[in-house]
Length: 182
Image (cartoon, rainbow, N blue to C red):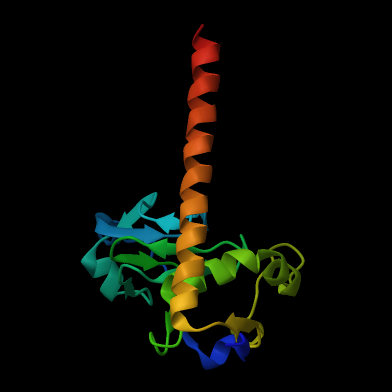
């Protein structure tokens, strides 16, 4: 079967986040991880530098994003993408991306689509000081849509390659650290 292409906006919905007021200390340092662009260090969003309280979540425009959800920056760090490993809240510079039909679009394939489209997304961004991309531009991106089993196969191969790349980087970092200590 031939791969078809569809507009991203026909396959997903985006959900934004928000930031609780920094003026209210009772909103911060709680038990809910709160992600911002500075937390995009790998393809997995499992740890965040900051956290908020349930009260902070309820008093802001942030929402709780479930595990196994693709999250992308739409302001700063354009072209990055990660998948959530736990429930977490996101700030206004991030968008959670939900497939409308899991029988048509695999979540991990969607993650790799964003990562592989990084250059295109960066070029679509605009802004003098801080680059951002509109949802309108994201919705107009064309995504290849092979059959679901093929999407899963492609995503699994890219997941394995990414794991090997990370292990290689860890080995090089350990080697460098060892050489410095000697």
